[in-house]
Structure formats: structure tokens, C-alpha cells
Amino acid sequence: MRVFKRPRSPYYYFDFDLGGTTYVKSTRLKNERQALDYAAAYRLKLIKRQVGIIEEEKPRVPTFQEFQAQFDAWIDAQHAGKPGTIKFYKSNYQKLFEFDPMRDLALDRIDEAVIERLKFWALRKVGRTTVNRYLATLRKALRYAWRKLKIIDKAPVIEQYQNERQVEYVFDEATYLLWIDNAEEPLRSASILARNSGIARVEMLNLEKDCVIIRKDPDEDGNWGDLIIKRGLKRRARKRVLKINQESKSVLENLISQSRCRYVFCQPRHPVQKLQPWVLESEMGRLREKLARDKMKLDPDAGLHTLRHTFLTEAGEHTDAFTLQYIAGHDTIKTTMRYVHPRAESVSRAFGRINQKQKKKPAESA
Image 1: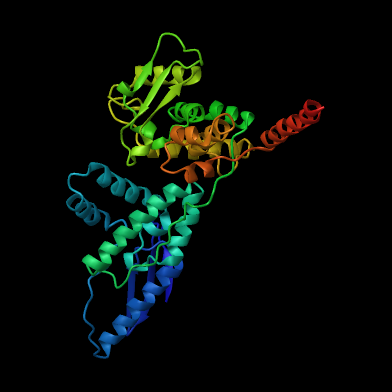
Image 2: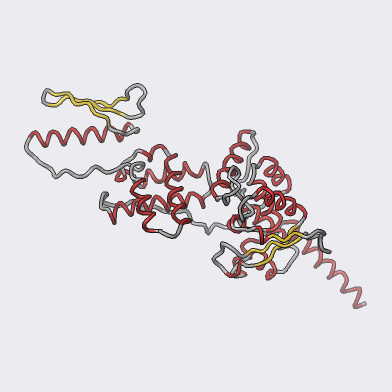
């Protein structure tokens, strides 16, 4: 028994002789080891039939790609009236097709080992948050096939990445300029806003034009207007007013002039549509690849969220914790403190002020 590939076919075939008959068949698999297993199982089934062992024929398990239509139909019915949820699952399912080892694999062959390979593949392209979205979609699909349709005997354990790791990296000025100079639009504009106002990505994507108030002249603090954060949010604490500086003003005016929908951020090629988060994820992936080709290494944590983190870290050096909590939109002060990482020079300045105060005390008492 052997497995082989035919010219211009990505799939493995097998052939073997049994009882004077030669059997040749496509496995519809691209992995040689899996193709050998399939061929062996097929041969064993023929032998059992020849000796009179009749097994109940099980329905063929669909591949991951073949299962898409059934999954999409179920998602449409399950989440009717929730277009955002439907789009989330459908787009992530489609994105998983890019992982070749899983696309044409039968659902019952997707195990923990395949999922680990999927994780490593995805992490080279996107961050952990996006990988978790892929894993959540895969888990939902496999559990549907297992619990509802009974077409697989079990679903594998799928462990998502924990988001509790505290990010300590902040952009320095040189890395920030490198990021901005090489970023595509709209990532460049989103990065400038995050760096200059601390606005989160979900808040940017849901920012509507009527929430941007730009004045003709700056106020005494150099602010040109207000960003009213109030839409697309789950927590009341996030409803707040941020300020617009000179850099943010230029970016916002440009975005608003290009958008043909009610949102500030629109699709680059379809200005009548709201910008979707995977556009920014894709652009960040391309930016990292570009800098890597130019031998400019970025910290693994460098990204849009880290630019918000950088702004809050710097703001924490100039204001009290409760004002910073408001700026960040956090429910609790404990969350705010995780965002603040005083740098070495800040600590040195704090001790310097204390030292100067202590030197004055003897003179005053004398």
C-alpha cells in the first residue's frame, strides 16, 4: 500500500491490491501521515466485508471547509437580529481557512495538537486577542457539530490565551515615529489618536462625527476641542469627555472629510461603511512584517493598545490617580494602577524633590 500525489493535485491518493483487485482512490487529504491512516482504515473496511463482518455505515464527517455552510446557517438562526455577532463568527471562520493544515481536515480529526499548531501559526500574524477570537469561533463550531448535530464523538479542549499578563512596554519617541512613518491608513490615524488621547480601539470604531467638537481656537491649555466617548460601550464608567490636541485635530479633520457615513473611521475603499477591527489588525501585521524585513525589530507588545498604554503612563506622571481613572474610562482605580508604570527618570525626579525639601528643613529651623 502506498500514498502518492498526482500531477497538479494537492491531495494524496492511495493504491493497494486486495483479493486480485487494485484499489485507487483520493484521500482528499494534504497530509501524508493522515492519508496513510485513511488508506489503512479503508483497506481494513474492505477486509471485514470480505469475511462477512458488516459494520453500520457512519455518515461521512465533513471537512472544516465543507462545514462552513451549515455553521453559517446555524449562526444566522441562532443570532438573528444581532448582525455584529453574525459577522464576528462568519468572518473568523473564513479567516481560519488560511491555516492550510485544518481547512480540508475532517472535523473529527481536529484535535489538541492541530489547535496548538493553529495558535503558533496565528500568533505570527496577529496578537493574542485576535487569536482568542479565532479559537472562540472554532470552539463554537466544533461544539455545535458534537452536541447538536452528533456528527463527531467529542470536541477537543480549546484553551484560549489569558489576558491577565500585565503589559509594561511603552513606546519611546523614536519607536513611535518609526511606527507612524511606516503605518498605513487608517492605522496611522488610529495610532496618533491612541497616543495623544488614550482612546481605546473599540471607542474609535464607534466614534461618530457628532461626538467630535473642534473649535476655531485652542483654549488656555492648548486643547482644540472635545472627544465625547459614549457609544458602543458596555460600562458606564467609559462615558467621558477627552481633549483634542493639535495632532489629534489634524487627524480627526482628515478622517471626517473622507468619511461618507456617520462614523469618523470608515472603510478605506468603502467610505460609506464603518471601519471593521480586522482592518487595523491586518495593517498591524503588515507593518510588523515590513519592519522585520528592514531589520527593525519591534517589541512583541508594540501595538495600538500599547499606544493607549503609553499615553496613560505619561499622563500618570502629571495627574492624580482618580483623574487618570476618568481619562482611561476604568471602573476601578485598581485597573488604572495596572496601566501606570513610573519610569526610572520619574522615580529619580520624585526622590530629588524629596531630597531638596529635606535640605531646606535644617536651614529653616536655624
